[in-house]
Image 1 (spheres, rainbow, N blue to C red):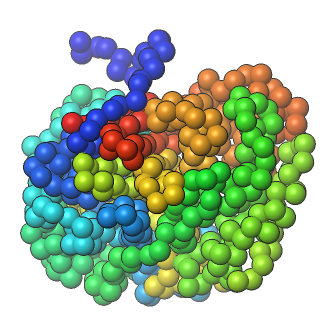
Image 2 (tube, rainbow, N blue to C red):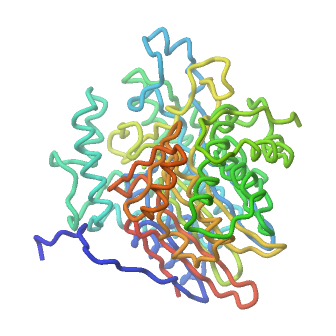
Image 3 (cartoon, rainbow, N blue to C red):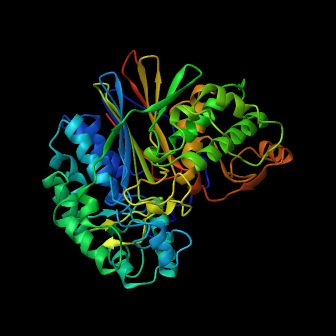
Length: 537
């Protein structure tokens, strides 16, 4: 048993949709899904389940998120959809001029420069205070238990953990990074698949967050520890930055796509890129999935949406155009007219003025949650606050060093954000939460899953399992190994630079839960590209 390759399977093993009545939690790691289900079975609701799963994921999938992450949520409660922006701002003292004086021409990936205020713990507390049923300490209990007692590392988690450890050995230099290795590679290497890993620091930190409802993290002992660590190594983030943070409730934005409303969080998130692409695509008569014309139009619409996103998306108070401008119907028609028979280079238009984890949860009261949480790049900045298990995110790497750009680096400003939760409704009824994590793959995954559902009538599991494509830059498009070869060849003839990828990790990891409005029955799909699992009853 010890020598079995847990990542090798020579056979096609299709999964079927998971169906349940009372509650469902879909995540990228089985233990986190089970933690959420435990809350439902204790009398909690979907919000309690989502928080429990999210907190547990900081322990059981640290390769993608952590206590120092940001988070966003779309929450359906009592016939209304709510949006929560749990992203943090840049430190007040940072600026482009200061970085240039230190020799930086661009924002690095690692170290203190790209560190922004972590928003995830505050988002958990805010969700619990407004919509939760169970005590906050009880909701965080599974995460604390796994951190304290340990858990065996799952296959895909182990694979990415090992890759990160090897990369960090090669790239991270400086005493400040030693605490990452102490925490995540204590014996000089990442834990192996099946090996039990635990972190007393994680457990202690999560317990303090639970007992104080986040006060220790933002205004207490943990804030002091982050402040001291930052000062020791010339970082910018301070306890004042942490104390100033508050999650923000926002109005979700949407487009009508063939009779369904597709919902996203407004900027600073990139959900509007997915909506812009769908707004363009709905003007085409698309009927056949495995058609070169279908894929060509999807890719070209995605390019146009990304070009606008790169130019305009920023902290909403700094944007030169509004969400309404970018989703304007006449503007979508104008952009649609640019799509011809061959691949073109992406260019932004002028609108009229006017490593991540994703989880979904639903309960038998009709509450549903679409939740996403991320360090940005894998383990984030490579920094772990000594003794706490808090891996600080590197979200600031997304800022522009161009002072004229809408997304330029400024103190107290939020950056362009890649993580986006999605939600689908029809009429006044919720269909359910969906999402695909993975950097700039996310809006592309949202478009593909939404179209697989609405245009091609695929069930939740099939909508996720469908071979994916990812536009990378200019005319370059990556496709998965099982992408139809005849379509790939035809796309190449249209001028697309098609690159087949053997590694599927870059194509995102998603979850879907749809609810039947007549019966309340839940239909869930989970990600086959990772350790995805659905816990239901």
